[in-house]
Length: 202
View 1: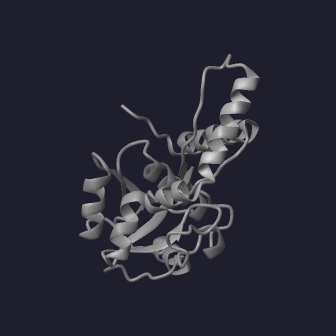
View 2: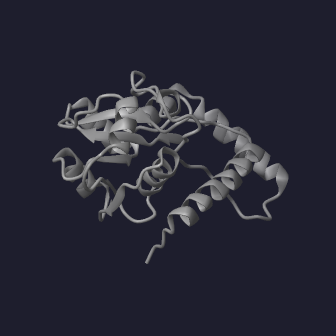
View 3: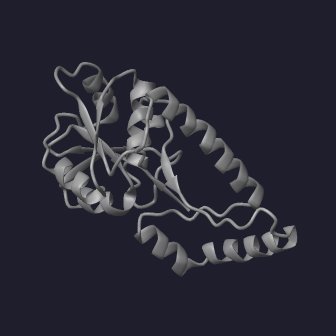
């Protein structure tokens, strides 16, 4: 499963599109801050990737959880943030936050009107949360294949799809080989982001 990280700003923000946001952050006078659920969280890394690709130096403010971070973003205590779909889509629909873009490779079914970061002015940007099922390294191949078939069949059921989408997650069935490649690619990508940003977690 996958869930797009949304780029969010308070409704009081002067920017309404990602293109405006990119220019605004590049020319911002003063302390430019973004918040997240904590050090090393998806929102933290998505923000650092934005810093690196947009060529800015926004300061990260780590919170102790997504809830407190969301409350302060709604209140305008910092300028922007990246957050997962589950809690943030509620705030967007309620008109408390403005979603400028999603970090996934494609637009998400829950908020199809929100464009991706890549299509809106930062080509190549991709940051999303994902989940999968893994087992012991020595699991027999026939067992892996059987489990994969069963899980893929479950992820194609309408009630499962509806429930996942309702919670802010997009079902993305794949093969064991595709999932292995994704894990390796993500480790490499985010390892480079962490090293470039000199991120350390206590």
